[in-house]
Length: 489
Image 1 (tube, rainbow, N blue to C red):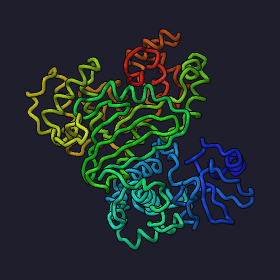
Image 2: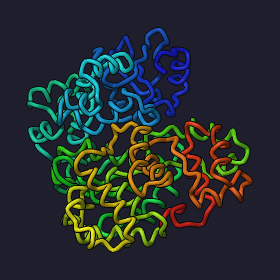
Image 3: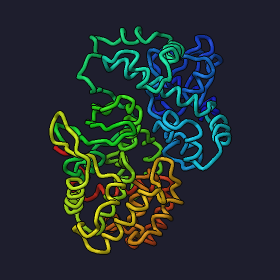
Image 4: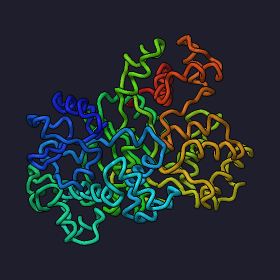
């Protein structure tokens, strides 16, 4: 979008927050870059240039605006809508892969050479993987500086910097303030808090309807791993350097996020996975406009716009839970999952009580004697085949997954039909166009609305909903009185 100058100038002059994260405004006279909705008086059009990423702005010598804090904008919805090389690379960078494995590790996960990845990212985003990761480290450093009492040396390494000098130089270059000056700007010494606990605000593009989003997560919560408490969804997190516990609560203009981490180096990854689980980088206006074009869906969209797709923080965990949920009720699926957690999950301590385990890893489940699993033999075979392939790397589920290829691999597994493969594609892999025409709730909603009820006919009708059929699923499910559709009280 940054190449459409007229549209970008219009968005900046109208301070349209819908475009935050789509592009950034770099002001040639002040050498500052802003989000489109920056509250200051817009500069003259001839003094504006538009860039596709914060990293590109920083690489061109611009520093972040202190008023609108463009580094905290919601991410571009492009990376959740697409499955090409650039989108998959951006999802991996957000998950901290460059910091942990370097550019060669990023390229290996994508199946391309490092040179190809660099060239594609430069062409589309104006910055390579190292610059993009550096911009992310700067944002992580700012969060730690402003929300924790950690010493600066600890923050430098927790944010992924290789030295304190690099940390200091980057913070000064990006924010035009030293780390100490950034911390001094926090009102009321807000940085002082409980050790290991961070309180953050996760932004999103309005509107956001929290009902089905948090309702789904709460209604399907696995005891010991997830819970709904005091207006917040809480769950345990398995992270690259340790583990964590997150509490997420919906507010009109943000999601309140409280993170407790065993290792602060996991902050960037934890935030990225929580944003992904709540689908916070979606563009609800674009989604709802497409679905409103169908006269039978339009009333559902108008009644409660801004529905998101509830996703996951752990793709392998969700795949296991999808198998456990085959042809059983939500309550039965929770019971099966809770047994696995109690028997094979890794215990942890929750300072607030209520959460007791991490969900068992594929490696732990692959070592389980199948005869000890209390489920039908055919489903037991499906589960053991899945976890074995996940454990040995024959099947990889992650933010880098190619949606079509992974779906085909899932369908090749015994016991995997279209429903299981598609629900994993929708909620674990993040495919916004995944569709569930065989789902009983979808077929029931289709009959009530006057849509075709048979899977083939409904799929044909849903062609006009592309590329947002996963969101249409949320609106169709919402016609039912199931607890997944309601914000818990």
